[in-house]
Length: 321
Image (cartoon, rainbow, N blue to C red):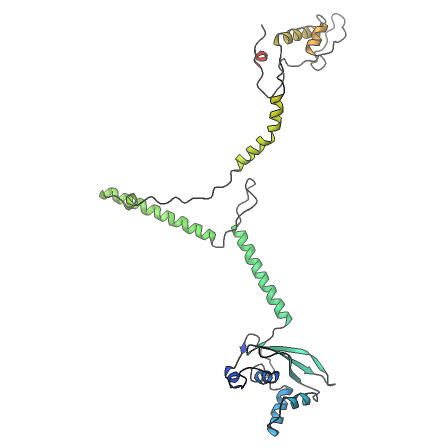
């Protein structure tokens, strides 16, 4: 039962430097020498057709060679055999193991081996290669995203969208630095207390001042937005500065307002020059004793001073005399 179980030898390689040194060519000069070298490795199966022929024929004929073996292998109708599928002597050889079909044909390759620099390896299959690559890629992606998530700063709409990813141990190093700074601060306080009690200067007082570590200044986004708003309003400010300032006559506007107010309550019609001064349209006269409602929109009511974003003129602010 144990003999029927096939060992998995994909994790090992085999070499025999003494056999290479005993070879007159001191290397695997031909595919036949590579097949003989492969026959000593643990990858060789003694149940193969090649081994059956070598065991039987070489006992009968010690001079039995590779040419006779290749001819007699074609007579088998069962089992499996080894062949040298590719050779680039003396560095690389590829050996296939294939099944023999009952009709004398040769089936697909079941195993592949290669000899590279006098070392024999078992070639992995396509499934193992793809599974290993996918497993490595999944592990690297998971590790990368975990490191990025751990180093991602807190969300801040005023900050830039770019951020620097710290190494996995960056936060731990910052914590260690903070602990060391607290310890040094406690030690310095205790040393000053002892120096005051004994009257001797402390080591901190006699030590030179430590060099100030320059820190990278963070961008001031408040200043950036303020400058952006100022730059956007420069064109409007230039236009307002170039336009002439409107001059207001407070006394004439006051008289026009009084005339319009008296006309509104029905005492006297407003003169034409009052409407012209105030910029309104005269209304037809009403019968005596019929009060007319005071509607600022209809009577052309407007403030005495012109509305502006700038400071009003002195004439507009001074009371009418």
